[in-house]
Image (cartoon, rainbow, N blue to C red):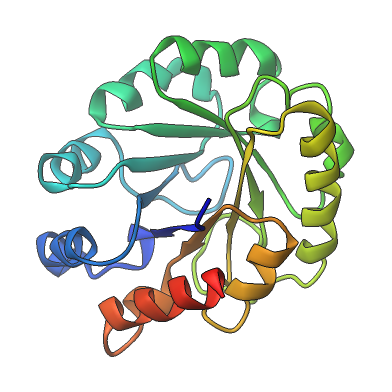
Length: 219
């Protein structure tokens, strides 16, 4: 399976959002990554249902919606209705995580669990058999443009060991500080999906940056 690339719209120019979405539509990217933040679970606010609905109207690729919010169970169906094709929740935010994952699956979309850099990979042991994907944060959640945390490679290897034993179909997504310089190493360590924000939308040619990251990941 080739590595999927999901440009993060958090880094897009929102004065030119329609053009940014059109660029991703016509590029080699595979998904749109949409970060939802509530100012409570993380110290930042981003977009909610209305903006996601507008993106969905013109997006030609699936929306990978990452909920960085408290009490996500209250909103799972609403985000699905807004246009989420993939929907992930943070480990810390779901006291009944198995139930949350099953609820997402019943909505007919991919269900993911997000784990932050400070949390041991072993916490995921009992949920991996039920999840469609794990989103491994390689920066602390809340803001774009952060430096990649190098321990991510070791954590990727740990996660792949659990994947091999418990759910070989599991997808592993990495989010934070991803660019053409580390995409190949991440893919080699077992990442199936790479999220790139600043490396794409901060480039002089975002479409060319997408090509470079994809090429590096697939070498």
